[in-house]
Image 1 (cartoon, one colour):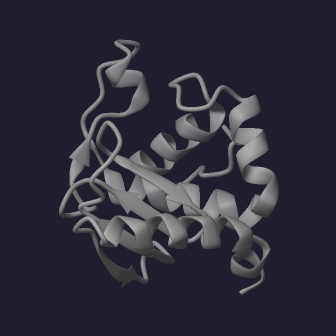
Image 2 (cartoon, rainbow, N blue to C red):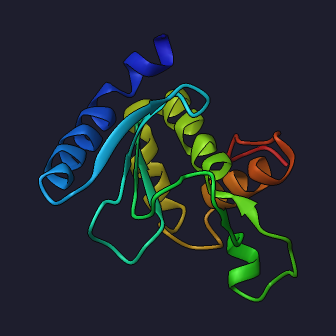
Amino acid sequence: MLGAAWTVPNTVAGLLAGVVAMAFGASVHWRARELAFVFSRVPWGPGGAITLGNVILYTGEELASPCWTYAHSAGEAEEPPIVLADHERAHVLQYMALGPLFLPLYLLCGGVSGRNRFERAADRYAKSGRGWWPWSR
């Protein structure tokens, strides 16, 4: 509960973006496993998902779909696909731990990039179920 309260400003931003997306065909549902409201069929962006607090905005139909890790996509490693829902759940946990500090720290670590420790941690968590904290190994 405390983690969800700590990240309320981020969650509100995600909910606002999701409500706007609903006007263009997105749908929303609660996913208890991800501890998040998931907006599916969000009609903008390059594809994939973005997490804001306890909200996941996804351009596809089903969040439990396979995707490549950042290292695989960058050609740095040959890895099997992970489940996008697991990757995004790691970001939800990161938000709940860091609250309003998440976005500035995420951007300082490189933003959307395979070199970003937040993305590497989310991939690690999606592969193993452990290690979502960006400063763990």
